[in-house]
Length: 101
Image 1 (cartoon, rainbow, N blue to C red):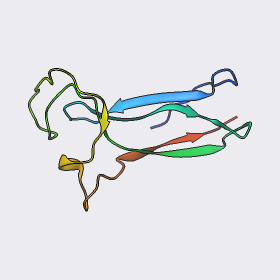
Image 2: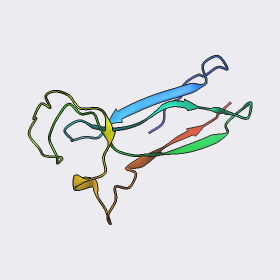
Image 3: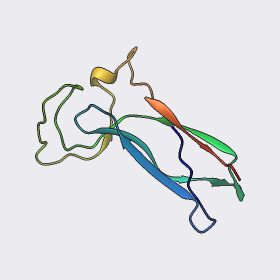
Image 4: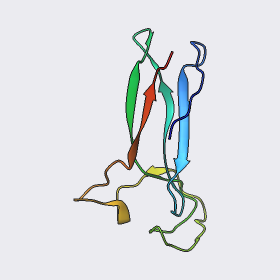
């Protein structure tokens, strides 16, 4: 999937998030990613997407029933549970940012 968007020197930061479906409240994303480095626009940047828990649902698997977390917990990177492969949780994918003009 691809999506085009405009940036300017006044607004060079990107924040994107998407849910991991189906899941209780897990997501991947980037926050405040600067696409200007050393004064120039980045030609291409690949960002590994680690899984995060939004802290609003206590489900621990993809098929868990909705279980509201009360009180909500801080957002945190997922390091345990069903996403562990070989002793750690690998990135679930990547976002590739590519300058097209």
